[in-house]
Length: 339
Image (cartoon, rainbow, N blue to C red; front, top):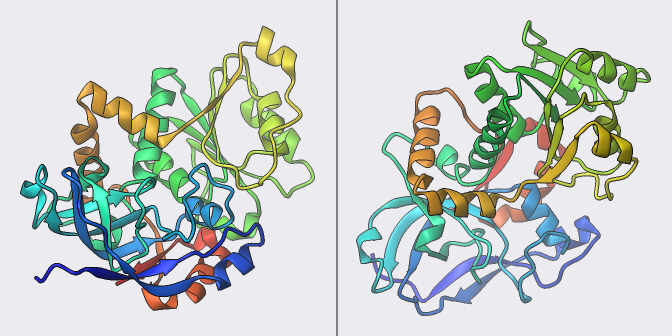
């Protein structure tokens, strides 16, 4: 195809803590595509999801802050149509890409990504699953790997209705690991049934802390995964048994972690650890294991062992109603933007 010089892209003119104002400020504009560097790819984007990190980015509260005006979108799938001099062999490949430092994000007709931020996709991977393979599955795989390194026989999931939690449950089932799920409301997640190896708790119930304590009683070395932060992290920490860990990978509460029992940390050898996907990916690449892990994840998706739940799809021109649909019911699944 003819190599384009411009791209229709979503443009964020300014960060805004007021999410609604940030969303309605988004525009579709023709953006000039810069010249490719030696290790860069020009990708015709086919589909891109909306993730919690994208929402935080619009508000200016994510770790990644770009010069304004900025093109949002951290994850996509597409076809490589051009490449810099060191990456010509990538042309024609279908890829999943993870974009953070690039000037042109994924909510765009065409985007530019560094070759090291792209995963070559296997045949048989559905386009919507391909669009969501770079962030959540890798996050879940990396964190579950930490639990296995800790020899944990029980894991705990705060924000258990999220997609990362769904992947971790699948990994836990495959490895016969017990799961304690913490949901916010009981009626929202009736489809996730408690089983012999799975306990469901609901944080909006008056006796939640007592139920949490009972669920953890008699166990040791629990690894907890927390996407919420704030007061709930401290509450969970204080009710975990000795030698347990909380791995924090999100801050949905937009609140600082508080209420930690310091003596638990000192004398019961409990700890709180942050998980950064970029650091995990870098370690995989350094150790030579990145392709092994992403191939394993792709095989599990193709074989139906894991999958991203897709709620709705929107055209990129409908970016505003698409994001509003996503934030209205994030637990229903991903919203995907099609180009």
